Length: 358
Image (cartoon, rainbow, N blue to C red; front, side, top):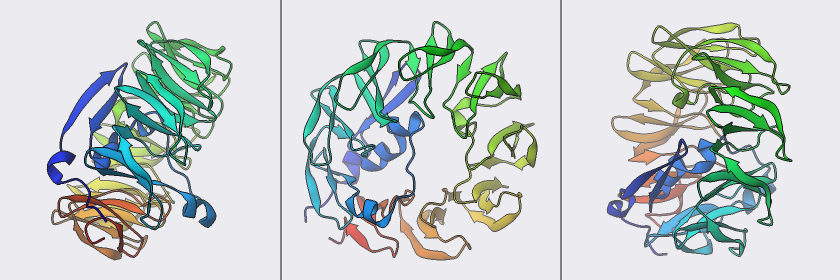
């Protein structure tokens, strides 16, 4: 099988700023995976059945073009696109001739490239940019909510945050403004609550727009810790981080240098420059000893030690020894890693299914 692109092509990138979101254009699937629009607007992978996993497609890059393999490493959509993102709801955004469109899981272009930017589908609609305005299309490519917003996020739990003038509110899937534009900033709903900023402080509203957790928290919105994950959200106080529950009660006091969201019941936290993991009571269950620690997915987490990445299980045992220059979390049984100057996919045993030894 032909080898993936070399390290030099992976590191070429340009950061573009569009309405508060950034998109990293590069031939590196590793960089694309960490900076793709779906992640920025709240898209995330969820657990799948064995049947769903066997049909999942994984993004690859060869000679500066993107395509997809299946879980066995077989190329099912040959690399041919300038850019491509992971499939969500049966569609992948692709870039061709500086325009964005969508393909289905056979590789067929189902929505021709025509948009300035295109984001992943969420709840049947996708955010697109036409001219300088944000709007939404359905899975046929029909514009169902005309471009009219300065900024916008993906639909979550039936609502989407949009910016009108200098304020944020929420629309429903007909495009009707159901929560007036009144907030300095807003993010998507999760667990029935959405973080909003009022007078420089963060609070939370319910789906009626009622403030159920009064604005009281400070901190950088770009930290990504404000939305609830598994019932908890991050807070910052005096330079330290902790967690609140969905009533706004501090359940894990601010004591950590940095934190990440809870996944599979555990969250990575930094103490004195090293990363470990806590459970939802705040108890340290995997002592801080890693230079970096990602969230758990499929029962494994990528960790960095002595300048190499490997994987641990939920007891903290190293199950795939550190050997990679970079590693991402597992998604439906495979993980994207960076080894010997090339991108590759491994399975849960650490065996390559696509990459350096194939």
